[in-house]
Every structure is written in structure tokens, then in C-alpha cells.
Image (tube, rainbow, N blue to C red; front, side):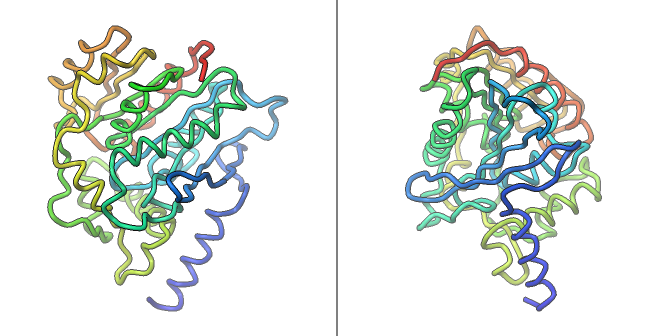
Length: 307
């Protein structure tokens, strides 16, 4: 790696690890670390410094199988899902699962699996819930939606949002080391070059091990890759979820398709479906702004939850 790239990586890491920094619409981000299964995971909160009291209800955003939390949900003020939630009076957090972003990589690549992701969600909720009497809601995208749903099937949550869950495998082929060209291909044509460039740059510079490879690359842990080889979220799991649930999908999504959405909607009495234009990469597509707004509106109607 060149000196200039090493310097850029170091500067980006310093910014990402800062306790607080200026952010969307006058809000601040506060990065902390929590422990899960012996690993330290990055937990980000977006806060309004002008608020007289912290929000009663929190929401935890959980990323998918490829990109970590920040480039998925908190890239820019204009398309930040955390900022949309904060504007609705919620206390928004995002989590880097083990093996992703600024969280510690697992000791063995094969242990970063869906059960471990559910444990990571549990650790984050345990850290957030004591200071939020209104409870904690979950928003998961892709692989993170499956982790959120499996957690909610066994634990109470205030509300649940599943964005493009993986009812059928979203294959990453045989290659799990994703360089910039592969990441651009994965995002697809619906994502603009400007958004793709920013997301990929943030992901590569904001992931602990990415810059140690030549060229820099994201690594999908083998445990995650194995979890994607079969549908991890059967519709039967939805019957165990008591929380009001929103399914969010792009109308042209071939992974979480219309038939799968209907099956999930019919599986539990408190499930509703929302659709926007776009495909499976909603957090990066132009319609992601509308999706974030509708998710925040759904979450802001929460009542009191007990954890």
C-alpha cells in the first residue's frame, strides 16, 4: 500500500473512531464499542445536541452481508436513515456486526454466522434498552433483516422493520473478497456512480482489515457466506413475532420478490407491506430516501415497549 493511501486510511479511521463528530442536519454521531461473544463491536448513535432530553424510544439499524453499518445507513445528511429516524423523535443507532466495519474480526472466519449476528443484536439491545423506557425497535436490511427477525421471534421489541430480507439466497458467487470493481458490480446499475463511489470509499476506509489487502477489499466472512447458501428466514419464524412489523421492498426486487413478500405478510397478524420503486439495494438506490422516510414514520408511531 502506498504512503498516501496509508495516510488516508489512518485519517479516515481517526474520524470514524472519534467519540463525536458533526453530522446530518446539525446532529452529532457518537461512536462507542460494546462486547459480544468476546469481540468488541462498533455501535453508533446519532444525537440532537439541542434536545432537552434524550428520546424515550430507540431504533437499532442492522446492515446486510456486504457493506457495514455507516455506508449502508448513515452516508450523507440527504440519505441518512438515522437522520430520518432522529427527525421523528427516535434515538437511532447502528451496529457493525462482528467481521464488519470498525468491529473486531472474528477469531476464525467461519464463526461470523447468522446465529452470531443474532447474538450481536442481543448485545446491542442490552446496551441500549436500559436508558430507553419506550423500548427498542429494530430495522434490518438483507442479512441484517434475517438477524433482526430471528431476534424478534425470541425477544420483545417495540417495532420491527425488515428491508429486503433474504427469504431466498442472495448469492455472492464463490468470491468473498470484494474489491472496488466487484463492490460496484454488486451495487448494480440502479445505484448512481456518485453514491456508489462514496459508499465503497467509506466501506473500504472504515473497515479494519480492508486496507491491509492489495488492492483494498472487503471480506465477507465464511460464516456469513455459509448462512447465505440457504434461505435463513422461513415464513414460520414470522408467526413467533409479536411486534408490529413492516416489510419494505423495492417493486423490482428479485431476491425479496412479491411472492415472498405475500408469504411473509400472511404469516403473522401484525405484518404490513410497503413498496417503493427500486430493487434489492434500496439503501443506496434513489428510492432509498423515500424508504427511509416511510420506515421512520412507521417507527414513530410506537407505544411503550418492555425489555
